[in-house]
Image (cartoon, rainbow, N blue to C red):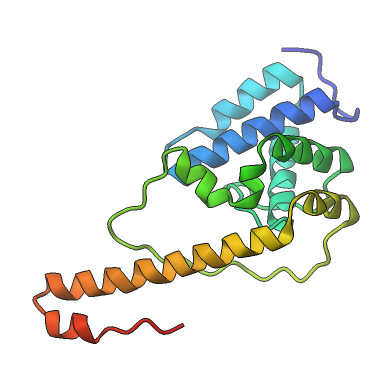
Length: 188
């Protein structure tokens, strides 16, 4: 393992490695593929010379950046909001090289092999975050067309409504109630 660099600032190379690893784990989680965070952490310790706790905390900081950007984040890494500008810069470098992740993260992961299950699952809604976007994050947001992102989000919402509409009709037909399936209306 490289010499411990605890207490020193993270280099761009270290930040880039941890951000890349984070997005790789996020993609695995969104696809429902298993991974062991402790093994990923140990590998990073060997590459960047940081402690287990330091890496865990940085993963939580990345979650906070993604939460503020309205993007999905790894559920096992609760967002810790006191992140450094170098981390925002690292996330910005990663997203700039992969703009589809910022524009529509769910679709980007879907194109990488995420398949929707046959049944629908519901989870608790996200908690609202009314904190203003910090200045370093505004720079990332400005790089991407917010109107285009909004249009994609609206289209995604419509696709979700359509999915539910047809799911409900199919469920009723499968239960032998075609009469009720014909009565289902799409109202939004």
